[in-house]
Length: 282
Image (cartoon, rainbow, N blue to C red; front, side):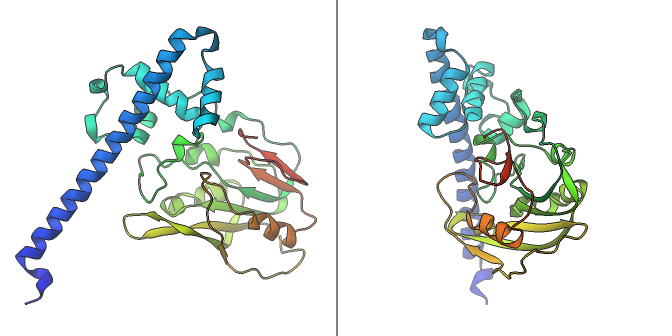
Protein backbone atom coordinates (compact mmCIF):
# COMPACT_ATOMS: atom_id res chain seq x y z
CA UNK A 1 0.00 0.00 0.00
CA UNK A 2 1.29 3.46 -0.88
CA UNK A 3 2.24 5.19 2.37
CA UNK A 4 0.87 8.51 1.09
CA UNK A 5 -2.64 7.07 0.94
CA UNK A 6 -2.66 5.77 4.49
CA UNK A 7 -4.84 7.35 7.17
CA UNK A 8 -1.90 8.65 9.19
CA UNK A 9 -0.65 10.63 6.19
CA UNK A 10 -4.05 12.09 5.40
CA UNK A 11 -4.34 13.16 9.03
CA UNK A 12 -0.90 14.78 8.83
CA UNK A 13 -1.94 16.71 5.71
CA UNK A 14 -5.08 18.03 7.39
CA UNK A 15 -3.18 19.09 10.50
CA UNK A 16 -0.56 20.89 8.41
CA UNK A 17 -3.26 22.69 6.42
CA UNK A 18 -4.88 23.76 9.68
CA UNK A 19 -1.57 25.12 10.97
CA UNK A 20 -1.02 27.15 7.79
CA UNK A 21 -4.60 28.45 7.78
CA UNK A 22 -4.33 29.54 11.40
CA UNK A 23 -0.99 31.23 10.69
CA UNK A 24 -2.47 33.17 7.76
CA UNK A 25 -5.44 34.35 9.82
CA UNK A 26 -3.19 35.27 12.74
CA UNK A 27 -0.74 37.20 10.58
CA UNK A 28 -3.54 39.05 8.77
CA UNK A 29 -5.12 40.18 12.01
CA UNK A 30 -1.75 41.08 13.51
CA UNK A 31 -1.15 43.45 10.59
CA UNK A 32 -4.60 45.02 10.96
CA UNK A 33 -4.11 45.42 14.71
CA UNK A 34 -0.62 46.83 14.20
CA UNK A 35 -1.73 49.51 11.75
CA UNK A 36 -4.75 50.33 13.93
CA UNK A 37 -2.41 50.89 16.89
CA UNK A 38 -0.18 53.00 14.66
CA UNK A 39 -3.18 55.13 13.74
CA UNK A 40 -4.18 55.47 17.39
CA UNK A 41 -0.71 56.60 18.41
CA UNK A 42 -0.51 59.19 15.65
CA UNK A 43 -4.05 60.42 16.29
CA UNK A 44 -3.22 60.88 19.96
CA UNK A 45 -0.22 62.98 18.93
CA UNK A 46 -2.39 65.07 16.62
CA UNK A 47 -4.59 65.92 19.62
CA UNK A 48 -1.68 67.50 21.49
CA UNK A 49 0.04 69.13 18.51
CA UNK A 50 -2.77 70.69 16.54
CA UNK A 51 -0.44 73.15 14.83
CA UNK A 52 1.20 70.22 13.03
CA UNK A 53 -2.00 68.35 12.26
CA UNK A 54 -2.21 66.68 8.87
CA UNK A 55 0.32 66.27 6.11
CA UNK A 56 3.22 67.77 8.04
CA UNK A 57 3.23 64.94 10.58
CA UNK A 58 2.26 62.30 8.01
CA UNK A 59 5.04 63.27 5.61
CA UNK A 60 7.69 63.35 8.31
CA UNK A 61 6.69 60.03 9.84
CA UNK A 62 6.45 58.32 6.46
CA UNK A 63 10.05 59.26 5.69
CA UNK A 64 11.35 58.51 9.18
CA UNK A 65 9.79 55.07 9.68
CA UNK A 66 10.05 53.86 6.10
CA UNK A 67 6.42 53.60 4.98
CA UNK A 68 4.34 55.63 2.54
CA UNK A 69 2.39 58.70 3.55
CA UNK A 70 -0.66 56.84 2.24
CA UNK A 71 -0.09 54.09 4.82
CA UNK A 72 0.08 56.68 7.60
CA UNK A 73 -3.18 58.24 6.44
CA UNK A 74 -4.91 54.86 6.20
CA UNK A 75 -3.74 53.88 9.69
CA UNK A 76 -5.20 57.08 11.13
CA UNK A 77 -8.38 56.63 9.09
CA UNK A 78 -8.79 53.06 10.39
CA UNK A 79 -8.56 54.22 14.00
CA UNK A 80 -10.87 57.19 13.45
CA UNK A 81 -13.55 55.09 11.75
CA UNK A 82 -13.22 52.14 14.15
CA UNK A 83 -12.04 53.52 17.52
CA UNK A 84 -12.68 50.09 19.00
CA UNK A 85 -10.95 47.11 17.38
CA UNK A 86 -14.10 45.09 17.94
CA UNK A 87 -15.96 47.35 15.50
CA UNK A 88 -13.80 46.40 12.53
CA UNK A 89 -15.94 44.48 10.01
CA UNK A 90 -15.41 40.74 9.45
CA UNK A 91 -13.46 40.46 12.69
CA UNK A 92 -10.16 38.66 12.70
CA UNK A 93 -10.76 37.18 9.24
CA UNK A 94 -10.21 40.51 7.50
CA UNK A 95 -6.92 41.50 5.90
CA UNK A 96 -5.47 45.00 6.06
CA UNK A 97 -5.67 45.29 2.30
CA UNK A 98 -9.36 44.41 2.27
CA UNK A 99 -10.06 46.82 5.11
CA UNK A 100 -8.51 49.79 3.33
CA UNK A 101 -9.95 49.01 -0.12
CA UNK A 102 -13.48 48.04 0.94
CA UNK A 103 -14.24 49.85 4.18
CA UNK A 104 -12.04 52.95 4.40
CA UNK A 105 -12.46 56.15 2.35
CA UNK A 106 -10.03 56.34 -0.53
CA UNK A 107 -7.46 59.15 -0.43
CA UNK A 108 -8.12 62.04 -2.77
CA UNK A 109 -4.69 61.86 -4.35
CA UNK A 110 -4.96 59.90 -7.57
CA UNK A 111 -2.36 59.38 -10.28
CA UNK A 112 -5.13 59.49 -12.87
CA UNK A 113 -5.70 63.17 -11.97
CA UNK A 114 -2.13 64.25 -12.73
CA UNK A 115 -1.88 65.74 -16.26
CA UNK A 116 0.18 63.64 -18.62
CA UNK A 117 3.05 65.29 -20.54
CA UNK A 118 2.26 67.01 -23.82
CA UNK A 119 3.64 65.79 -27.13
CA UNK A 120 4.08 62.28 -28.50
CA UNK A 121 6.57 59.70 -27.23
CA UNK A 122 7.87 56.67 -29.08
CA UNK A 123 9.59 54.92 -26.14
CA UNK A 124 7.36 54.28 -23.12
CA UNK A 125 8.59 52.63 -19.93
CA UNK A 126 5.94 51.90 -17.31
CA UNK A 127 5.78 50.28 -13.90
CA UNK A 128 2.03 50.60 -13.18
CA UNK A 129 0.79 50.74 -9.59
CA UNK A 130 -1.34 47.61 -10.06
CA UNK A 131 -4.18 47.18 -7.59
CA UNK A 132 -4.17 43.63 -6.19
CA UNK A 133 -7.50 43.89 -4.42
CA UNK A 134 -7.45 41.16 -1.78
CA UNK A 135 -4.84 39.03 -3.56
CA UNK A 136 -2.55 38.62 -0.57
CA UNK A 137 -0.46 36.00 -2.32
CA UNK A 138 3.15 35.60 -3.29
CA UNK A 139 4.23 38.72 -1.45
CA UNK A 140 2.41 41.14 -3.78
CA UNK A 141 -0.58 42.14 -1.67
CA UNK A 142 1.31 44.85 0.20
CA UNK A 143 1.40 47.30 -2.70
CA UNK A 144 -1.29 49.50 -1.13
CA UNK A 145 0.96 49.98 1.90
CA UNK A 146 3.62 51.69 -0.20
CA UNK A 147 1.95 53.79 -2.91
CA UNK A 148 -1.35 54.80 -4.46
CA UNK A 149 -2.58 51.98 -6.68
CA UNK A 150 -4.83 52.14 -9.74
CA UNK A 151 -7.52 49.79 -10.98
CA UNK A 152 -7.43 48.21 -14.44
CA UNK A 153 -10.17 50.58 -15.59
CA UNK A 154 -8.23 53.60 -14.36
CA UNK A 155 -5.11 52.43 -16.19
CA UNK A 156 -7.07 51.69 -19.37
CA UNK A 157 -8.61 55.16 -19.34
CA UNK A 158 -5.24 56.91 -19.31
CA UNK A 159 -4.60 58.93 -22.48
CA UNK A 160 -0.96 58.00 -22.87
CA UNK A 161 0.75 60.34 -25.39
CA UNK A 162 1.99 57.66 -27.79
CA UNK A 163 3.45 58.30 -31.23
CA UNK A 164 2.18 56.39 -34.28
CA UNK A 165 5.25 54.17 -34.10
CA UNK A 166 6.25 53.34 -30.55
CA UNK A 167 7.41 50.69 -28.12
CA UNK A 168 6.25 49.95 -24.58
CA UNK A 169 8.24 48.24 -21.83
CA UNK A 170 5.70 47.25 -19.17
CA UNK A 171 6.30 45.68 -15.76
CA UNK A 172 3.75 43.15 -14.48
CA UNK A 173 3.75 40.46 -11.81
CA UNK A 174 2.41 36.92 -12.06
CA UNK A 175 -0.88 37.44 -10.15
CA UNK A 176 -1.95 40.15 -12.61
CA UNK A 177 -0.53 38.72 -15.81
CA UNK A 178 -4.02 37.90 -17.11
CA UNK A 179 -5.31 41.39 -16.31
CA UNK A 180 -2.63 43.46 -18.05
CA UNK A 181 -3.70 42.77 -21.64
CA UNK A 182 -6.61 45.27 -21.70
CA UNK A 183 -4.20 47.98 -20.53
CA UNK A 184 -1.76 47.15 -23.33
CA UNK A 185 -4.55 47.24 -25.93
CA UNK A 186 -6.13 50.44 -24.63
CA UNK A 187 -2.78 52.23 -24.87
CA UNK A 188 -2.57 51.13 -28.51
CA UNK A 189 0.07 48.40 -28.28
CA UNK A 190 0.42 44.73 -29.15
CA UNK A 191 2.46 42.28 -27.09
CA UNK A 192 5.64 40.99 -28.76
CA UNK A 193 8.00 39.39 -26.24
CA UNK A 194 9.26 39.65 -22.66
CA UNK A 195 12.18 39.85 -20.29
CA UNK A 196 12.22 38.06 -16.94
CA UNK A 197 13.82 39.70 -13.95
CA UNK A 198 15.48 37.13 -11.69
CA UNK A 199 15.44 38.92 -8.32
CA UNK A 200 17.69 36.32 -6.66
CA UNK A 201 15.91 36.84 -3.33
CA UNK A 202 12.74 34.82 -2.83
CA UNK A 203 9.19 35.61 -1.73
CA UNK A 204 7.11 32.75 -0.41
CA UNK A 205 4.04 31.90 -2.50
CA UNK A 206 1.28 29.34 -2.56
CA UNK A 207 2.68 27.28 -5.43
CA UNK A 208 6.36 28.20 -5.66
CA UNK A 209 9.09 30.33 -4.19
CA UNK A 210 8.75 33.53 -6.21
CA UNK A 211 11.87 35.32 -7.41
CA UNK A 212 10.86 36.73 -10.80
CA UNK A 213 8.87 39.49 -12.46
CA UNK A 214 7.94 40.12 -16.09
CA UNK A 215 8.90 43.03 -18.33
CA UNK A 216 6.62 42.85 -21.35
CA UNK A 217 7.71 44.35 -24.66
CA UNK A 218 4.89 45.69 -26.83
CA UNK A 219 4.85 47.72 -30.04
CA UNK A 220 2.61 50.10 -31.93
CA UNK A 221 3.14 50.44 -35.68
CA UNK A 222 6.72 49.79 -36.79
CA UNK A 223 9.27 50.14 -34.03
CA UNK A 224 12.28 47.91 -34.66
CA UNK A 225 15.45 48.67 -32.66
CA UNK A 226 17.59 51.50 -33.99
CA UNK A 227 20.66 49.55 -32.92
CA UNK A 228 19.98 45.80 -33.27
CA UNK A 229 21.37 44.22 -30.12
CA UNK A 230 20.38 40.90 -28.59
CA UNK A 231 20.17 41.10 -24.81
CA UNK A 232 19.69 38.05 -22.63
CA UNK A 233 15.98 37.67 -21.87
CA UNK A 234 16.79 37.00 -18.19
CA UNK A 235 17.99 39.95 -16.11
CA UNK A 236 19.65 38.67 -12.95
CA UNK A 237 19.93 41.39 -10.35
CA UNK A 238 19.20 41.08 -6.64
CA UNK A 239 16.17 43.07 -5.62
CA UNK A 240 16.75 45.94 -3.22
CA UNK A 241 15.00 46.56 0.07
CA UNK A 242 13.04 49.42 -1.52
CA UNK A 243 9.59 48.19 -2.43
CA UNK A 244 9.05 47.70 -6.19
CA UNK A 245 12.36 49.25 -7.22
CA UNK A 246 13.33 47.88 -10.63
CA UNK A 247 16.82 47.10 -12.00
CA UNK A 248 18.80 49.97 -13.52
CA UNK A 249 19.86 47.57 -16.26
CA UNK A 250 16.52 48.13 -18.00
CA UNK A 251 17.37 51.76 -18.75
CA UNK A 252 20.62 50.60 -20.36
CA UNK A 253 18.75 48.08 -22.52
CA UNK A 254 16.18 50.63 -23.68
CA UNK A 255 18.72 53.38 -24.38
CA UNK A 256 21.00 50.97 -26.27
CA UNK A 257 18.17 49.76 -28.52
CA UNK A 258 16.71 53.25 -29.03
CA UNK A 259 19.50 55.82 -28.57
CA UNK A 260 17.47 58.52 -30.36
CA UNK A 261 14.13 57.74 -28.76
CA UNK A 262 11.81 60.27 -27.21
CA UNK A 263 11.56 58.69 -23.77
CA UNK A 264 8.63 58.78 -21.35
CA UNK A 265 8.65 56.96 -18.01
CA UNK A 266 5.21 56.49 -16.48
CA UNK A 267 4.84 56.15 -12.69
CA UNK A 268 8.45 57.16 -12.22
CA UNK A 269 9.95 57.69 -8.77
CA UNK A 270 12.98 59.67 -9.88
CA UNK A 271 14.18 61.66 -12.85
CA UNK A 272 16.73 60.64 -15.47
CA UNK A 273 18.66 62.57 -18.11
CA UNK A 274 16.91 62.68 -21.50
CA UNK A 275 13.71 61.17 -20.05
CA UNK A 276 10.39 62.81 -19.31
CA UNK A 277 9.39 61.36 -15.93
CA UNK A 278 5.73 61.31 -14.86
CA UNK A 279 4.27 60.22 -11.54
CA UNK A 280 3.08 61.43 -8.16
CA UNK A 281 6.34 60.46 -6.43
CA UNK A 282 8.62 62.70 -8.50
